[in-house]
Image (cartoon, rainbow, N blue to C red):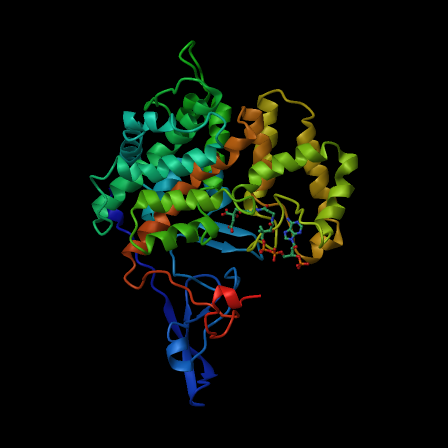
Length: 445
Ligand code: SDX
């Protein structure tokens, strides 16, 4: 826990502007204040909308709704900007490392050398799991999907680590945060080992964060295993790119779970469940399956046609984004990393990469994709790297979850510390049956 950088509370500013509506019940004018942040669109503060006008808002999928104020991550989807605590993602990916940006995302500032060393020690001393959890794994089938195992094991952590679960105590919050960041690689590596029937490899705390994960995943007790430093650096960079992304579906899930004051392990398990969906973090697994199904470049037009077809549920996985209407800045960095890893491993002419690059070229010239501003997102190339590293496709989203745990736990801390946050409880537009009397079964049609 780092007392120096306590969680900074988000503080919107009033612009002095107002939006005027009419109370549908009285005809009186109602003025709603406009608030601004440091970057991005201003917001209409509608907290009093229903009380003062009788209206709800209607925004399925929250396409135009801000759920909170936050200091953590800023995205400009039109320009393709992503910043963690004000620092551009391309600079962080090139010049920083995952635990350093974990500190930045958690505490709001880049650590000094001493702060970084202490944070790394705090994290690396929590990498082991309670031995009883190893028994917990034995309850799963060997062919269980790693994300199902991750949901179960992370949700169960509160049954093993209940000594520091006072969510209103900042020290307890930070201990739980450190435990989650530290144990996710171990939990994910063991989910893989369990499905391949190999013994679990204990963490080696002298290794780096990504290096330790690769060791736990691919080493065996039978021989010495040396992690390839180029692969460790590439994975560390991928963890940086996946660490946080503002109010995406899984982060919003963690926030709304946390708003009921559930314990942090339960909240992160909820985030893992949401991330698993192929429309979100599960897309990296779906992309690899899609590229494999396409197989060769000559079949690409057939799949583009299906993606454009309203009557066909098929979508081009790894393309499109709710926020980015320009190239996802992370996708460019992942593509560059892809070439670096394939070269390091001596993999020439990887057919999946050939298909992916040709698919991107064709899609970016196709008016369906151009009109809808559909570009490759972070999931489009990442799976090719993971596959080259030796991970099965079923592990791809678990890798995403390891990294995103930092963002989830930072947003959870920010929400708990924010005095204006309250339990998340949206309303609805009811379009069901009006009031009607019960019909006894003998009188039903
Ligand atoms: C992640 O939110 C985040 O920040 C997420 C993430 C993070 O870091 O947390 O960035 C990680 O989840 C990236 C996204 C991974 N998902 C995929 O790659 C799955 C494929 N993409 C789509 O499912 C879709 O693009 C979404 C879910 C990502 C975004 O959906 P939206 O914002 O709700 O957009 P939409 O469905 O309203 O699409 C707008 C139009 C529609 O056509 P029309 O009705 O206007 O004719 O674009 C079409 C869609 O049919 N469209 C696609 C498409 N994505 C959108 N058509 C074909 N293929 C696609 N991939």
